[in-house]
Length: 339
Ligand code: FA5
Image (cartoon, rainbow, N blue to C red; front, side):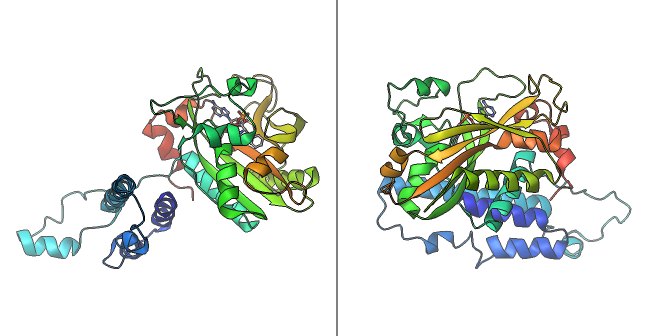
C-alpha cells in the first residue's frame, strides 16, 4: 500500500492540467480505480482476524488520504455549470476560490529521484516495516544482544518488545528471504533513534539501503555504483573520501563521506569538519547471507546505507536538519515547482 500511495502521489504531482488530474482520479479512485478495487486483488482468506483488521485499517487510511489529496486539486464535478444550475447566477466578478497546490517534501523528492536512478540500474524497490523485530534489526545482521555495536544506535523500544527500526539495514535479511539470490534491491524508508538533536542529527530520519548479491561481487562493484549514484544525484563533480568503517554486517566496511556542499569543505555547524558522513557501506558479511539462507561460498554481495535525509540537505542546500521535520510551510513551498 505504501508503494501504491507513493505511485499515486507521483502521478498526482506530475498532472499539470485539469484533464490530467481527472485522469489520475479515475485511474486510482474511479469506479474501476486501482485503490477502489485494491482489496479485490488480494487474497485475504488466509489472514488472521487481527491481520485482516490491520489491513483494512491501512486500506481505509489510504482511501481517505487519496480522497483528501484529490479534493484539494480536482475541481468539483460539473464545475461552474453545475453551480449555476444549483444556485442560479454566478457572480463572475467574485475573486476565484484559489487553488493551493501542495508540494512534495524535499526528502520525498530525493527518494523518488533515487528510486528512478536505481530502477534504471536494474534494482527493485522494497519497503520494509518501520516497527521491526529485534531479530531483523540486529541479530540477523550479526549483532547479538550483548554486542557493543548496539550502543551505536540508541533504540526506541515498544512495550511489546518490538522496536522502531534504527536503520533500513533491518530490511536486508527480510528481502533476501523473500527474493533470494541474485538480488539487486534498494529499501528507502524512515528510521528512528533516541538521538540528541543537532543540525545534522534527528530522532526521525530517512535512509536508503542498497543490497546486491551475486557471484564474484567485489569492492570495485560497490565503488562503481556509489560513483554513478552521486554523479546522477548531484549532476556535477563532488568530492568524496572513503575510509574504513566498522559495521558487524559487512566485511570489509567503509564510510563514504561527502565534502560538505554547504560550506565547500571549510567546516560549518552542519558538517563540523568539512565532511559529512553520508554512505556507510561494505561487502556483505557471510553471516548475514547465512541468515538469509544463501551459501556464502557461492554468493557474495555489497550493501550500503545512504543517509537520505542528509543527501536531501546536501542536494538542496538545507543547512539544518530540523527544517525538514519542522512542518514550516515556508520551507516546503520552495519545492513546489520541482519534479
Ligand atoms: C547505519 O545505519 C548502517 N545500517 C549503514 C550501513 C548499511 C552500513 C549497509 C553498511 C552496510 P549509520 O548509523 O552510520 O549506519 O547511519 C547511516 C547514515 O544515516 C549516516 O551516514 C547518516 O547519513 C544517516 N544518519 C544516521 N543517523 C542519523 C540521524 N540521527 N539523523 C540523520 N541522519 C542520520
